[in-house]
Image 1 (spheres, rainbow, N blue to C red):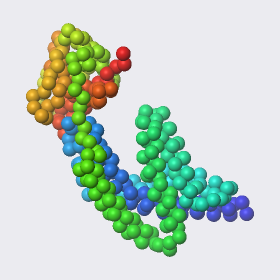
Image 2 (image 1 turned 30 degrees about the horizontal axis):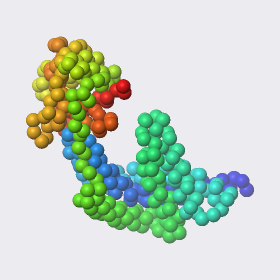
Image 3 (image 1 turned 45 degrees about the horizontal axis):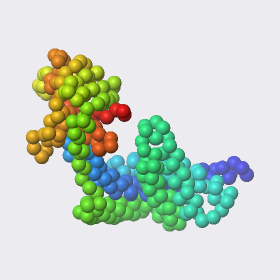
Image 4 (image 1 turned 180 degrees about the vertical axis):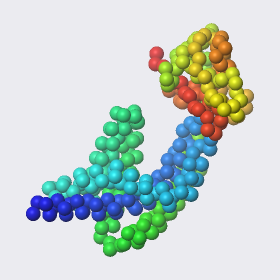
Length: 305
């Protein structure tokens, strides 16, 4: 008797998971579009096409990618929520939609805590996004199970929902952008005093700037002396250390941001221009080495006082 119940529960979980995959696939293009629209309010560091090329690739290869991505999202979000909701329903009862909603939110919070611990992603933002992604499958599974659709019938309905959600996201994003609800990113305007101090980046990079124009660099990426991009062993940047000088650089035109021009008294690399990014409260310096569309981006964050 116990074995039969276990088999029945496994079959029910597999049925719910099979229903979750098309539902998840249907929402992914709209979610990707909304993420891209939101990213326009963040600094793109003047690189590439701001994610537009990625959106185009997603649309072209969507028929192949969406089932796989839907399966992945279902395994990560939907399946844990299913396994959490079923025993709660059996034990306490109540509306199925409410239990599935709570289970989806609890799963999102759990993954939000994991990603915060491992990757230092912002917990509230990550948990909120994962909760939104988990709600439609959590509520859609119960609806799909009441219909006698074939797998093919489920997938073509998923395609229709996908198109509708994408159109809704596109229209809403355009309206929000036109209304100024999604402002375009503007880099902060830093004074010489605000540029003065210690800046740190990845791989031990450190840059110290003093008020009198002196600079001290440790493990700092700089422009290579040889800029021949066609060379077989061309490097986007070289890592240098030493003392030098710096000065603010206001930029030359509308497409060239304010920043600093750094000169090191070594033969390691060329003068490097670092541009301003971040915000007033958390400023950054960055430089894009190599190909503007596919180069290497390096950033420095202002160290705490």
